[in-house]
Image (cartoon, rainbow, N blue to C red; front, side, top):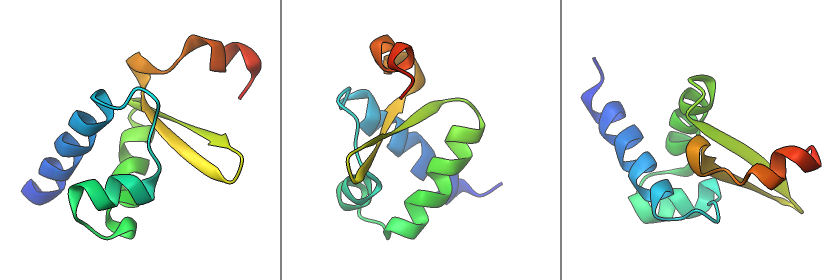
Length: 78
């Protein structure tokens, strides 16, 4: 088991809990202190597991916890 990977995933989830407005990969990588490609790997694993949602807003892609994802976004088809 990749304990560093598990730690990064838990840290990502913890940060997203405190940011219901969503965060970009760049913001997450700065907060955690890892390269953006590293956090991208774990974001896609969490998305595949159905734990987070991704949403495009202009040129940015925001990431949210599934249980904190605003339901109004789903209705708008975003």
